[in-house]
Image 1 (spheres, rainbow, N blue to C red):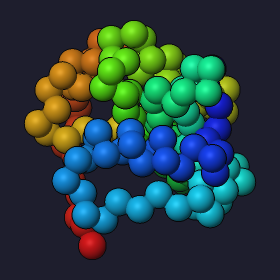
Image 2: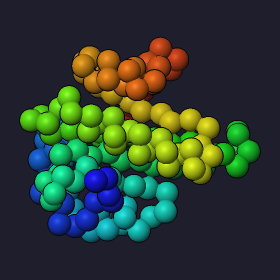
Image 3: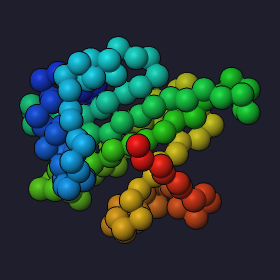
Length: 142
């Protein structure tokens, strides 16, 4: 089942994020931040819950803009499936859930970034219909 994350998911989220960025020294999952995201109508921290076991997560941010009338766009971040449960359609189900929601609110696109070295993830995103050749992503960290 896909649901919004709860405070009690903090440790499992941390474990999943550690699989995504194992060497991060800045990672800090905070229960209050999970609550803030949960209560924000434009931000979603979703988990794939299999009988109480959190096997995957994705963050969706809905962004408003002026370029396409009233149509927002979605930004997908931090999609991760537990390394022991990959290739079981969990990532696909998380993305489908995000896409269904974005369609329901008339988003005109969904964007996501992926680390340039994560070639296996890139193949997955391409299989799911995301085109990695149309844009080039840039990041600036603080």
